Amino acid sequence: MSYNFGRSVTQQSRGAHSATVIFLHGLGDTGNGWAPVGQQLNIPHVKFIFPTAPTRPVSLNGGMPMPAWFDLAQLDQLLKGEQDGPGVAASIAHIEGLVQQEVAAGIPADRIVVGGFSQGGHVALKLLLGTKQRLAGCIACSTWLEFAANSSTQQKVQPSAASLRIPVFIGHGTLDQLIPSNMANNSEQTLQRLGYSSVKRRMYSGMQHASCPEELGDIRRFILDAVPDTPPPSKSSTEIDDMSVKELRQYLTSRGVSTTGMLEKGEYVSAARALL
Image 1: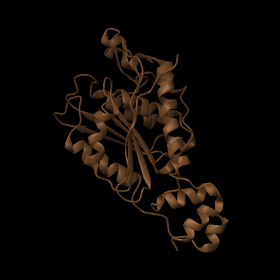
Image 2: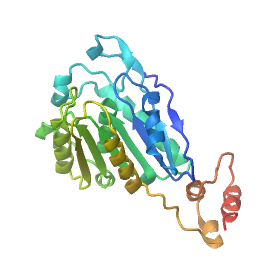
Image 3: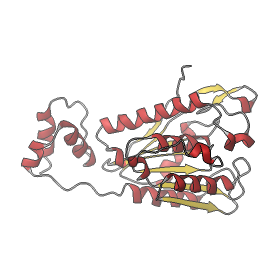
């Protein structure tokens, strides 16, 4: 089955672009629904990308179409098994493609944070478990891991060494009426059993299936810890000459220099030397 993903909402950094956050919306929403959050977080060196899921029939919605990262049947079955394996895989591949676009544009993988809310957070966690790249962080808001209560399934999951180094933030409301708050604890324990050593879980008293200013503040601090605004030190003329095109692109991008239209190494070298 082919999936037609919607348009991503992109917010360029207000300062020198040195990091990117890709954040996935929940069931029935679009990238536009979370775009104001990027403005509220107000992190000048970060570019925000809010992808939009394909519009597809959703079993939980009586088969009526709505934006969804994958099909969902019953909320009370979330912990008992994957709802829509192919749909999840397609969404993960789409987000991995966005990550690779950022890397190709000069942002290293370890300066890219991937996260999401509810269904989008589930996709972010599944991407985390399967990635071979050392991303900067993973944000999981009001979401779940479908095998959190199944130890035999956990044994089949073998995250890469790079993945295990990725810090994780889990946020959940104590009054969430859709995704029970105990799922946050289950997810934290599952990740820790799998070998993730940097998992931070925060519970928000009185918060339902939503977000709140306190959570956004915690997310902002998590992002700043994961991708601080610390541009790399300046390179010498000799170091610039020895850099590959990929390294030059990353160096220039991290210092706020656009590499659009550059094709030859000499163009990158000239732009880098102009910073000396």
